[in-house]
Length: 279
Image (cartoon, rainbow, N blue to C red; front, side, top):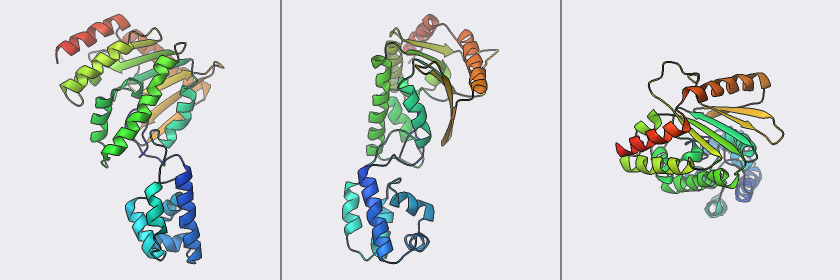
């Protein structure tokens, strides 16, 4: 299962050679059997769209598909044996990949988050706590693979010292204690360490705040080396990359206002230390 910037998400996996090869074998056996995709889909009890995605190497075939396809295509064992070698590129949902490519080259990155700690700031235990609550449930192997992908993205913070990172985080994200006190304590320590980096600015938006420019939801903004700005807004099972200068300008104004409404970086560090002491 692919994941979005922060937590679990959907989307088809990025194609790999093994996925494409397995899909080609399925298609060849189906056509040899004289079955259309519609006829084959009925036999394996999967949608025509799912069959097409598997044959084109865009979707991982699960065990039920493999077994039903074997039965429908003569029980040769070819699919069952080749399925053992299926691999895919995990870690980023399809809708997030375009933003991730821009993110990797950005000279400025702004993030406002009100739902959970952003992916670039997460720890392994915090991510595992998030993924443990994912529905449908994920296997331990899936969770670990996704953590590796998340950790790889986090290298941006240290490997791009000339990129300016700004984060505005709601206070309740730490108060919630996702994963328990120990996980939260480690998370706060991690965020405090990142706050020491010259290119990273972290601000907390207090829970009690009479005015708030970001009530429309989370947002991300970035500036490319060509000084072009993009925005990204994410919801459940979806995300939107925004390039319209007028819309991006509106989001920039909101973010700038939030920076003035949130605690200063120095006061944020003090609050994090106090919250840690309360655990």
